[in-house]
Image: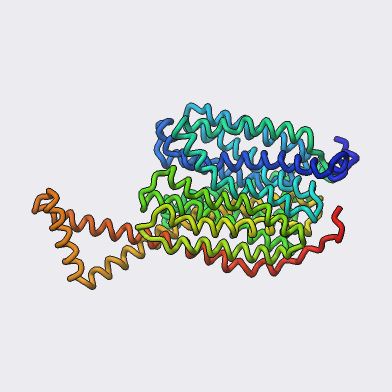
Length: 526
């Protein structure tokens, strides 16, 4: 295949460059957001999918696991696949494949077929984020990348927050199948814009015909084992399960062997040497932490509202939206500040600390909290996230050459993906363990004060007796209610510990931006 004679920036410069750039941004934004909305919306529909397809909830969770595994395997291959097939062709194939597999998911008559189609959906969706991000970064000059990343970040950060509400509404009002059919109009728009506006730069075609099958095999085995371990760890009691231990060993051996192989092969599919740049390596580390905290908090807030405070699922979803709405409005502000040469390291540090404070505010909730008590923590975190995400997405690849951009964005996509999976798995495990610990401590404290326990029991027995309870059963029912109160209090304390740990992660990460090198922009941008 002959390489085109013009670079992407040259093709865009023909005509109105500003309009063309933002049309490209819309094209890649539609492609990336489609995948994120679909992924996040499916989470809330698992009980409905299980009931409709005559499966248990545990069996239905493979709808999520299968997608995450295939998605994680393909993510680091995005740069290599773009060089092998051509970036535009790969994007067209990915959008088309994701849409076709989504329709097949919506039509699936059984759980086994749905899981199979989700594997295809994850494989085609895995290249969307790294490829669209690489295209966007190359389309805009370095001085305008902050604004481009702000636009791209609207979908990346806001979609996981808004999508569960949309998914819950579609599922309850219509059917879970409509979550998958929703992709069709968005994909048609994306395909039209990609065909009209995206052009491959010449270096995309400088590729080797050799395919690293050994590297792909080790990557697939290692990532698959690691992803299944994270997804099923809490359910299987983590390392108390022989299966989880086996998966951990397979993941460790597979991934270590993959890294060694890639560092010594002539045609690597993943360019690990990019980590020699301290800005890129620090940014990748921060991407993992951002994924952990963002998705960990996205899981904890609705769970707390529904399981302990008794809020309906729709209410819990709606009161998770203020964070996304504020993030949506402040993303352009972060992009403008970067365009005006504000130090991205300072903005990133500020965003991390403000987001940490927002997460920490969740740790002051109690069992009498109402929806409005969730508003201020959501607002503070929503105000901090744009100033964390936009500078991070911009400065991390600032020193990466255009020829390596696809490989760099693939690694960043994998970091964010693993961070989100790790965050969800570890934070739910932490909450469960801390709940058990607090339960033991509360019971021990009550045992040290028998007079208080006896007084509470008498008061409850008196209340139950005067509300129609038989005298013989009041003692047993009083103890049951006291124990239920202890469990609720212990669960709340476990959730609050989880929020404190997430906030601490952001605080610990706050100094990392200062390891990065400050970008040097031209006085007059191109």
